[in-house]
Length: 308
Image (cartoon, rainbow, N blue to C red; front, side, top):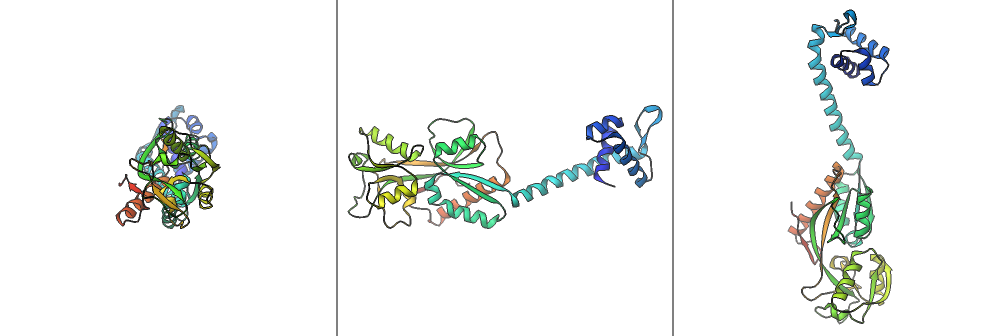
């Protein structure tokens, strides 16, 4: 007895017509009829009465129908569960993240996920929040770590706030002040990120709110390039505090209260349910953050928001 034979049997039983059942199952009618006859031979009893062109179930057919439906349903459930498990083992997560997060705490979370799910492919897109939101909307990413608030509200996204981080003024170590004000950047050469970076927009907005236009020493860089330019003495830059970990050639000066802070959120499309692999990555990331916060190992200037 084969599942395909049972599927053909149920189709005929429900349509009470061999030709209609064949059309429903997308198979030639003679092939369907042959499989039904084979099933009847294996069971040792006719399943349908074909008198005068009418197709009705025999007592044996009546007895088999609920069993066949249950067997087909169980087979479909098993197929889905195995497919989901196999998908998680062999699936992929397309993750977007800002450069500061890639250079900071994301690497450890990715390492933990890879350890727990070694067969899941990880694809990481490093870019500014605007570009990541665009890629999410286009279906090119499953999840993205972006910076709030967005420059424009996007009702197609679900955002989950997870972290707050302080922004500091990065400069070569020396006679650094205990803190700086945004006004202290007036006239100082700045190393500025390329267009599309939320850090660029945040810095420009803060300077303009303080009543001046910043002076650029160099602009257009990615995160690593900006930090290297600052190390080389080209100017200072406003960056998240976490990216200075492991860079002895740089010092971070806090900005005076209220300072500058930003919120990191995990985002996905509202109209698309995240895959099981993406859901597993979210759980791994949040668990890692909660554990790091509990042990006091989050980078300086980071505050955990979401702790579920």
